[in-house]
Length: 370
Image 1 (cartoon, rainbow, N blue to C red):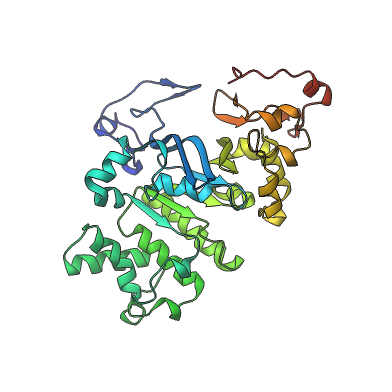
Image 2: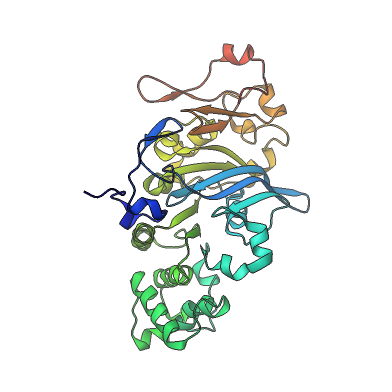
């Protein structure tokens, strides 16, 4: 009889005992699991990271943990700080303050000591595919460039083998004629697959995708997204996916974080956040799914400077919502959390309802609610 974990051959977080030693049930949070790694491995942890550009606060102090092997979606209107947070997570943007841990190591120290080895572990797909590739490079050179820059592979034949394998993985041609083409000779779907190949050629363990399909036609978008998710599973990737479209996040996410005006307002398992949102802003996005929830200049001007950034648009906002930024509240044992003075409540019918006017009037805010 096999003593080790039956999932060991396919597990991306396995350690030596997993293959040959039995383990009893362990309590992890509110669950029990038979796993040497505790069932949950944090790939990325951000602690109180923030970022400003001049007088503009792009990201207020934010905590975020992303688990190994999951699809985590950052959702919010345009200008909410999603890209800033994602680039900080990828190591491409240095926060003004805070700490970053990646694969159990201090990211900033890692960058100072050996940035190339960190870059080999993180792949990035940018929002506009046509602008994120050099039009002076051929298809082959675009995919091979990360291998050459970061020294992952040095032999020419080995570089070619890696490039061809990766192009095949993203369902692009590997014949010589295609390899010699330039981006302006490709359609937008092929360029985005090319960007995906470039991000994957170093065999990263974390992939950051910033609105990777927003510039594509819906028919092409679905095909590219399907291949991206297939590769995430096949390679055991951790995927941080940035999108303004909460309807898209509904289809792909394991967990969702909802952002507005540089604040992470709600975070939790996708099925919980979407079925029973705690924050009124999350419900607002869900109600606007057909409009894809794009932000306007008016929304930016009316956002509260000291309180909740959604207060000026919230139907249940009270005075305190404009004056004090809310502390966190939690449901399901800290699995699902939000920052709201008056969180939505789930009804017996599976819907959410707002807190009553009488409850708001009688509410006395306590900073110890978390």
